[in-house]
Image (cartoon, rainbow, N blue to C red):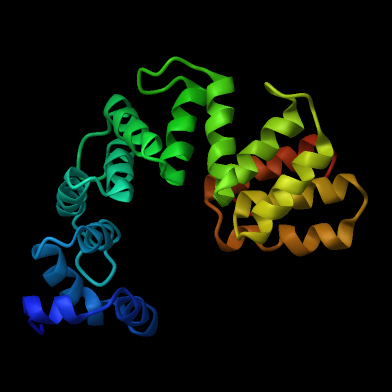
Length: 240
């Protein structure tokens, strides 16, 4: 594996790093990311932590990934703060602990990170991690993240308006949220947009979105999606 000096790392601009990560396989830039992380670059520490967590370009080592997230979080890198929460939420490299996860998500949310707002809003919405359930506060956080363009939050806001939770039911607004979410590439947005199009009698438009859902969806969501379709009087569409 090629070694890198501090001078090599310092001479690499963010634009060059972005091009490096876009143009080649992760194995080719893993050594640079690790060198930069070891030299104390918090952005590189966060990226390397994610690579270790996912096993991208390096052997999968979730415990080591969490260690790098912690180092970057201690330097106030908000995405690293959020990822420490995600590790505790999902048991990645550490025993799962929703209470600890909620603590880190709130730190990231308070720092203004869209993903932190989204994840802490989940805790508020469901009353998890020792957090008192508060749908109004959850919606406010989802909306705040949505205003930054956070695609998944836009979709969740749509669900609130469709159901009439906390806010008056507004199907047009829900439809708009789902459309923006779908166009942003989120499989839940694609499904809900397709579902509403079916309900509006626009089958051809609906199918264009519904067939894309399995490309990035989870099996659990496909099962849930089939149930929602059947509740609306449509046949199940997905193999779950």
